[in-house]
Length: 476
Length: 100
Image (tube, rainbow over all chains, first blue to last red; front, top):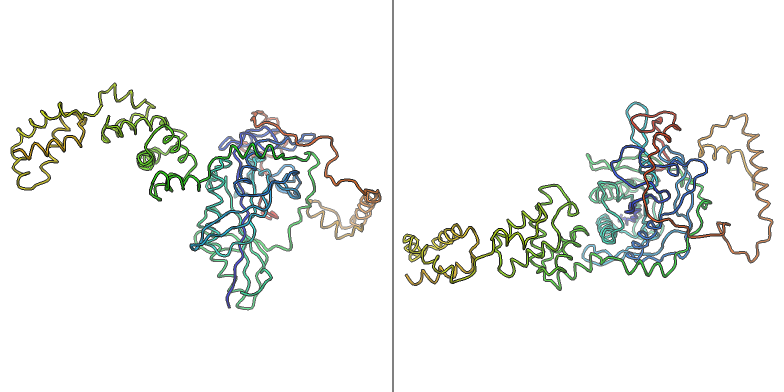
């Protein structure tokens, strides 16, 4: 019997604001427990939630980037549940009138383009963090309480684990390039829940779904879905029934493990949040946000490959993060040759970041300086060998490359009237090399180039001395 | 609207309330009369009245994204029954209905 899978995703993104969604407490990571909270986060009697405008702005950016319909009037609702991570005993979310509905993400899977529908997306607050001790106690830190989240709910239109993987990659890239979220799974700024059901091919009615929560990498999502496809098929083939349940992916065994059987849908008793007035989202505001939307990864990719002539691989490396792509764009805008800029970004800059375990935002190199250095290479002022020294100085100390090259007298020697006599002298002093050259040993030239580089402290223009050496040797 | 003993038990479980078996009858009765009183609202003629979830005279109340450090942990922590290293200490609860 053949089975068809139906997969859906609920993805949470932490929105990049400075303060929380309903209180002015700072959004911070690694702060001491319970220091970045206030009476609103703690739900003290009499406090009122006060909506952070930027949470809407960032949410609207993602809605625009996923072609979703933004509702003209939204409001918040209470989702009631009791757990120590939420002092209010409810989460403020959007249930009845969410931020946006009916979007889509275009993916490519198995060589074909496919649209995956987005059912809806809404903004809500995160809960605090519980750390479970081994002594029968849990430890609660409310710093995360009230951090803004955007939850993106897909339509159950994903047909297999590979498509699921492609959907997550694409969604992540789209959100990343709006700048609305850091989208780092390892830091929890992107969290993935998935559900999967299977049904015999030809059957219309969907099967019973199994949920998997908080998967911590796309690869785990793919593996757990693939495992579930097989497991559920076995259950059905042996005449059993799939249980409505939540399962957990076990990294060590690559299997999914039953966590909890669900008896019907959870009863959250949603009702409209009485403490927050409805929000009207004007077309004017949407248009304003639209005009500030950064270029998508796709747009940038097309420009890099088609206009700049970069290799697909190089374009993809640049597009790994919005920060690196922005840096590259600014370097090109400052007058750098795109191909050289890409080479320097992907090798030297990335190498530096990896070696020093830092990010682009932490380093002293500016796009303007990188562009200035590339211009010096391009117009022959410095050799690429010297450029490496200049680069090391600029990235470490933020030194202006042009000034550095001038101050240190690093300008490349290209003047033939200066170089020709030096070439003649080197050839005169190395008769053995002349002999070798005549005997067809190409290495002879390399040796002579090395001698000249030594004499000029690496400043001689390699192209020019190669040419002069060839001419000189031909004469002998 | 009819409130049954089962409804009361269900809501009590959801709300983590312990209600003594011998009190269930009394609570059910009381809850019924409260709900029925609220039900009187449905007798009001609302023809032509626009549906709303709010009766306040304002909407779209936003604040700017400006963080404030309140530095009030010590004050807030006075409200917790038990603490350790700046954390709120609570008994382990594993059977959470849903991970948020």
